[in-house]
Length: 73
Ligand SMILES: [Zn+2]
Image 1 (cartoon, rainbow, N blue to C red):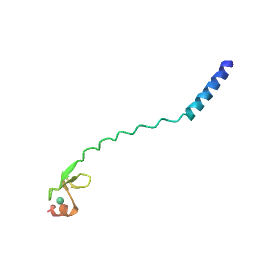
Image 2: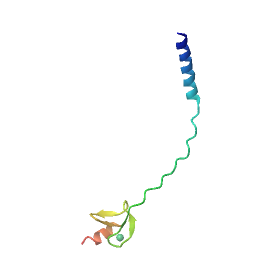
Image 3: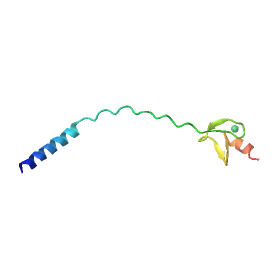
């Protein structure tokens, strides 16, 4: 029974110590290199632009809707 009380006291002290301890400042996160942009060329004028900004039409990509329309026929 004596050891049970001692254990409880240690548990409480440990809990207080853990909650009172300041977390060490996190080291600055290593900024991961941005993934290389997947570039595509406009099928109409040849302008290179990121695929995310291009207008895809099947296997072809265009820099703007106008070139997509002009190359459509
Ligand atoms: Zn274009």
